[in-house]
Amino acid sequence: MTMMKNVLMFIKKIIVAILFIYTYNIIVFPLGIIIPINIFNVLIVSFFGLPAIIVLCLFSIFVV
Image (cartoon, rainbow, N blue to C red; front, side, top):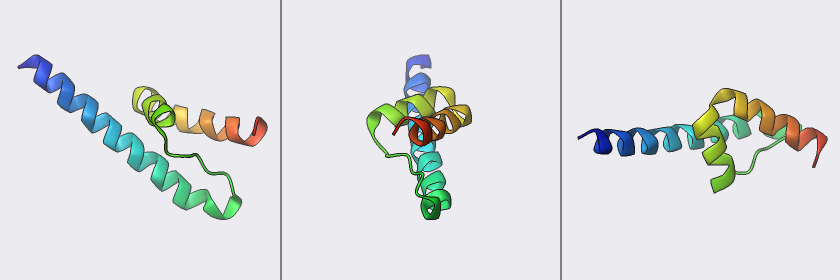
């Protein structure tokens, strides 16, 4: 039972991470600072949440 809960919680976190990144991209699209939706970014945001979006945004501004 707990294994099923963990799997469902992980899937829920992935879906929420995709929605976070998508919402962020819609809001900042006019500025040109977007975060691509790929497996690497989705996993980072699903594990670390909102601070990961901020770090990915700063990474895309200063590195790319």
